[in-house]
Image (cartoon, rainbow, N blue to C red; front, side, top):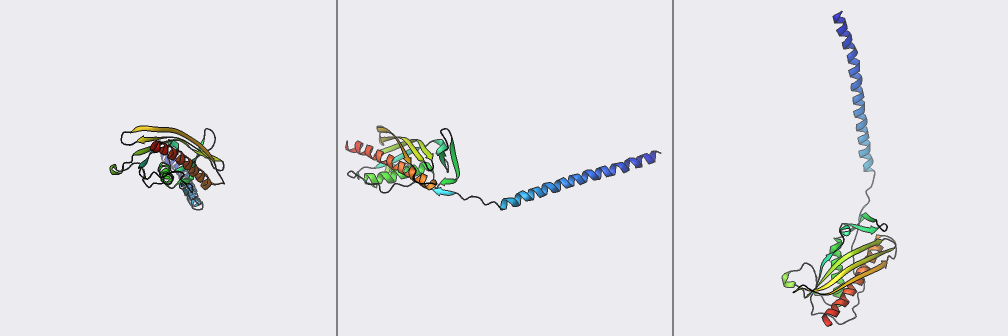
Length: 222
């Protein structure tokens, strides 16, 4: 009787183990098929390409005073808000919200582009090639240095953009602040799309450049 009981127990265990193994194997197969479906479905989704933009000086930057050819001027440091200091173009999405446009990016650092655009504009307005960007070599140290602190430089595509900044003219040798001014301008965006928005930002920088150039003439010529 004891032998019969053992055999009976063995016979009842085998089907239970087999059924559990089948369920486990089927589960693994379903997970594998699901993974393959997800993998191959990804190949059918085209990734949106990114577009890249640069700031430019508005054309033309017409000077209206005598050249300052004997004066060396440096632009920088330039500071911008932290939320703008990223590869993506940042726009407004409301009073307290911003939009980080993942597929619309700057072709170079925004901070660097602001400084380079100011250098290009001031060189044209002051009619001198002796305008350089910070940092500079000691041998090329300018007589005057323009510090620019940008507080706001964003807006809404298709609507407008705002540039709010403070600039200072400093005597480089003594680091004495000679002239400090605040500057604010809002420029409407003419057209749709990000290219029109960036063009409006370039226009705003052109207006800031004219303001700085006027201050430079005041400092140099009195």
